[in-house]
Length: 174
Ligand SMILES: Cc1cc2nc3c(=O)[nH]c(=O)nc-3n(C[C@H](O)[C@H](O)[C@H](O)COP(=O)(O)O)c2cc1C
Image (cartoon, rainbow, N blue to C red; front, side, top):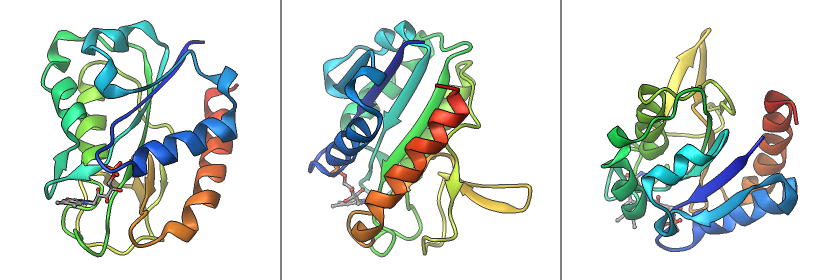
């Protein structure tokens, strides 16, 4: 199974989280591990599993390098590929658009044929008003991936990453 992790970052927080995920899962887990600014949209077709790390910027917008990929996703066939999201955001500063980016990209990936429903996490340990990254499933409030807040809850990141890595290994059966 070819697994790729691509992260976008403007101030380094999502990159640091990506490195923590790599440390937890081990380098050999990944066929590719890169800053998304270094890839073309078509590169996404090369992998069985895509782990996407995306911070929300500019009040509900995608990080710029992910925006460039997003704009060309209609040219990409993601049929049958498993997608997992992680994001960083700021729940106190942007409570109405908290973690929007993971939701926006997740929805697009699934619309392009990808398999979702993996790596979802409890949203009740975050305080926010609205998020495109949050859904209600079987009565539970969930993020469509791993949501981290390095601005307001940095002390929770390490354990959240550890728990999520164990969760996705089980979900992927690796
Ligand atoms: C101008 C600006 C706009 C932001 N907009 C949002 C937002 O709408 N939603 C959110 O959850 N976080 C928002 N953030 C917080 C960033 O997503 C957060 O700091 C993130 O960890 C940055 O990741 P990076 O360092 O990898 O770029 C914003 C931050 C700034 C400075």
